[in-house]
Length: 123
Image (cartoon, rainbow, N blue to C red; front, side):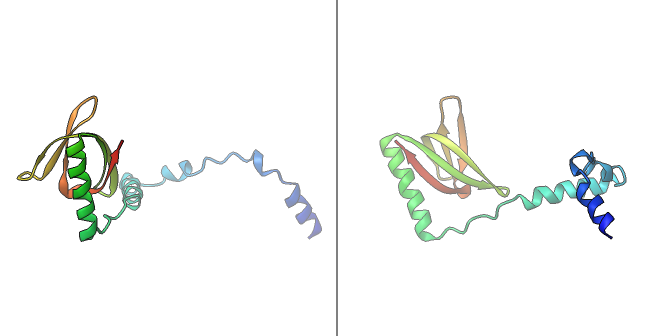
């Protein structure tokens, strides 16, 4: 028993070159690999934050103030399980289509009002 423990402690694990998960992929069907990839993408998704009445009022006040001052804002929006950030000045708000048109130094883009979860004025 003592020889086994001595041999085990003397074993240098840094010399073992294992292929990791690559060795198992060859035995898996392509459908299984796709399902695993989809699963990993799904668990990375973030749930939509629950906003209450006060949060919506704060967002509205920040947007109105940014329009009056014509300053840059940072908009945080939630779409398909992830947060996206946009920065620019508000050019137009279309309430019939429920979008805000922003301009950054490179382009114009539209942000849906329903996707906005936070607005910060950058001064």
